[in-house]
Image (cartoon, rainbow, N blue to C red):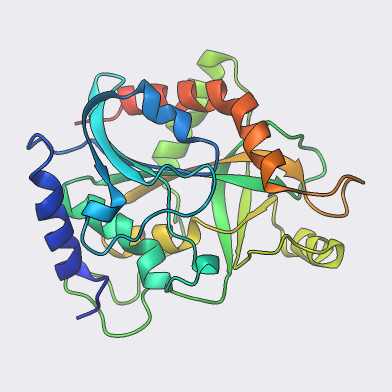
Length: 276
């Protein structure tokens, strides 16, 4: 079996359980670049550095704390991943998706993924939140390649990778909170270079509304193991060629800090209404 398969996920989950109270989380939340502030909203039960989890490398990207956190959010027990593993760091697609297997082994059946993304849709502005309706896997890697893992669907249905009912709940919460929640297609590219103007024009023609360098591997594996997925992008900048300003990771972190309160309130509201 794979070094990042179901058996490895069970071993990692067993090690984590030694540090947390034995409660099944209602959801697992992956916190993207600059969105780790939601971790401060969690009434912590425990935090486990990635280096203490078998199979997890340390997080290396600015804006990623590199720890697994458990506790209460919106009155519900959750597990949060403050930081992720990107293929542009040299990681295999199976490792990029491995945390989804681990939180599933901990008992989570709902996965909430977040990311910082460049805006391809010309109607959107930095600081907007986007509900991910669908994605384009332009990383040209799939974490399910190879021998099928026990319990995986060999050919998972991807007609609705992001759960429609969870999306409807997110839209309802956003309306109640007075938050504008756009909806669109996320294009996942390998990175780490930002896209060229020609590539952004290509993405527009492909139907993408936002572009980033993560999320897709986790969602593919989550669907293969039967998890429901909700995805939210924070639009941090206009993609290259749509503005005259150069793009930097510092700008990404600065914009997510501005949008953080809207993001935290939205996720907290969704979690509060999930069925345990």
